Image (cartoon, rainbow, N blue to C red; front, side, top):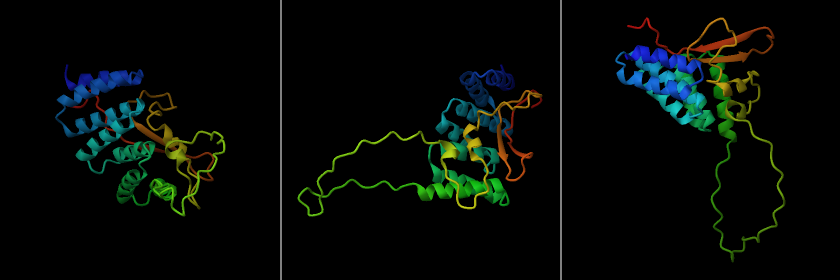
Length: 224
């Protein structure tokens, strides 16, 4: 079985929700791939599978493999930034967003993401060192009785956990938390392959929706 037919089978497994099986077939196809666009597509689809399986570190590594082949691949940069946010590595995520702004400095989406990441980094507390004050030190205080602590409500994850800076545009970044789970479009007229799609509401335009399609090169039977 050649790499193209394995890729087609992988697409079928992915559409059926069998992400582990799809990942295995994409991996086998990658071992036989020789063309650059073929390799980029397979690494991208492997990243999509890892994302579906909630294997964020592996998804980020696949994005890095894409960027080694194409340093300006916007889809891989955006997906890696999202997975880094899921892992709370905000500095690295900001680095990827800055790279996106180098190629598209006028993007409102990228600029808003950068501001939110900067705000999150500024608000992230610095770990405190252990108290090494000796017991006989004048500054040493006896341990106070601890009061019961009420359970805090669950904290938001991913992009939703990053607070909005003052003057923020109001873009709903919670949609980014479902990156990779939105592979199947709500428009059922077409049967799509694995891809990354972002939907963002625009302020003041209730009937307008901006859809940013992050292109992932997918293999079809037409690829030589």
